[in-house]
Image 1 (cartoon, one colour):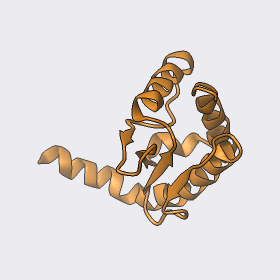
Image 2 (cartoon, rainbow, N blue to C red):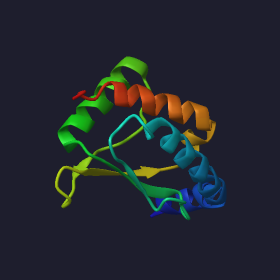
Image 3 (cartoon, rainbow, N blue to C red):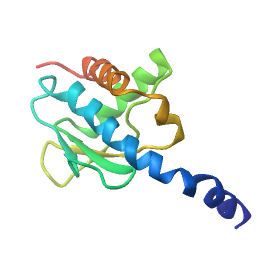
Length: 123
């Protein structure tokens, strides 16, 4: 309980900056994904919290493998764990913008997403 209270003291005042930066992260994601994958969805399209979803048309295992490879090769992580969705052929992940993301610019996010997409199987 003490750790939770400390977290509230430290993180709660930062939430407005996380929410504001989430809009920049979404812009970078959109820039990196448009034209690079056949379809994607960011939900909601304009985030109103520091968390949102990204949907891509690949199996979760393929996306997880690309994410792991990117992390090992670049020491950067764009996406966390992917989950197969109820929509056939689509997987979803939740993105949480927190302190570590504040250093990333729109261009940084877009470049990292492009590098992630390059690790996906090409048809």
